[in-house]
Length: 418
Image 1 (cartoon, rainbow, N blue to C red):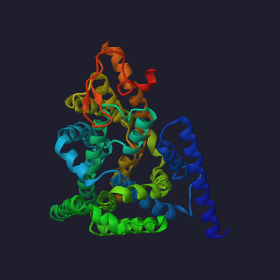
Image 2 (tube, one colour):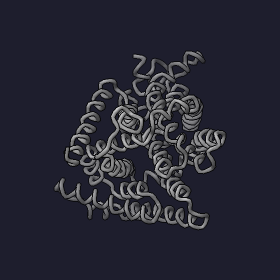
Image 3 (cartoon, one colour):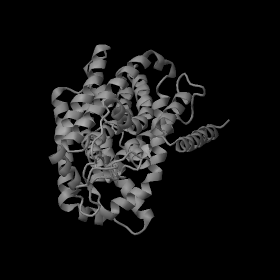
Image 4 (cartoon, one colour):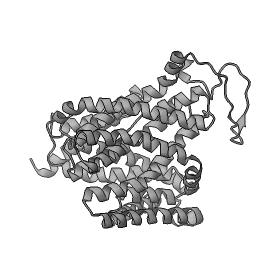
């Protein structure tokens, strides 16, 4: 059969399978990420049906998927939001990094994988999944809860930290020396600072230049600009993902909203290909030997992430019930963990790192929605704690409104308890 025909058949089968898996995930009301990873394992080395002709195209699609994931993440935040979060919530970010990056680093060192693998696995266990958590908050009807701004602040700080962390990891994986690595980090920090400064002062002008009433022109300009900046960033050994993230931050207002709507289908397509590609490069036979360490790491980081959320919510004056909900909601890991592990797999750091990261993410991307739903009621039963309803946010001014003790309101009550 002609190679182009084989490519079309293989690639068409992948896209069709992803669509069907996405529908299954939607019916079951959980993230499709684990199903995409499993599909990659099925099509990859040691899988049921290894790919041939279309693997190179899937690799390119996967790279575009990472870029679009980070672009869309940047579009969610304005530069002023990021600056405000840095000023007010940085202690929670520091606690989050210390509690959740440490278990990954320690495990890598205990298994003898070396300091580079330790730095990579620290990132895998540190960062929660913004996409999964946002979906869970919407599904559970908690977007108006008092603890939700705390959750979002931690996610914002984690995402912003990636602008520093990814260049460091890129330099370590490239094997550059201390001087070259310092230059790479300085370039990354300088670029991030410059983009934030330009976005704060001239964001409206930048958005006006990009803006267009024609969806086709807007899509082409935003996508072209993103790929161009991502390519230049990668050429400077900063990180294509960081470049895309900074482009997203620079755009604001109506342009950001319109670009988000136009790019969402493309992001979903290429992000799915990214997860499949990661699975393709993970041999399913390598997962059983690392399953127990992955499970132990998942249990430990579930506890540390819950503790992080509890502490951050307590610091913000949230009630005990809201603290437990905050901790349980932050447990899910997903896209960023796979992005970080994917860099290490491509660089060939350690053959066991990819399978362990895959198993770890599979466990927590499934467990995350469950902990978000059930951590608070389980903790309440175990502690026998009953506290009064805290002040909830005014929908008009965003200021606390005192409520009398009594039955839980919609903003404070877990919808699953209804």
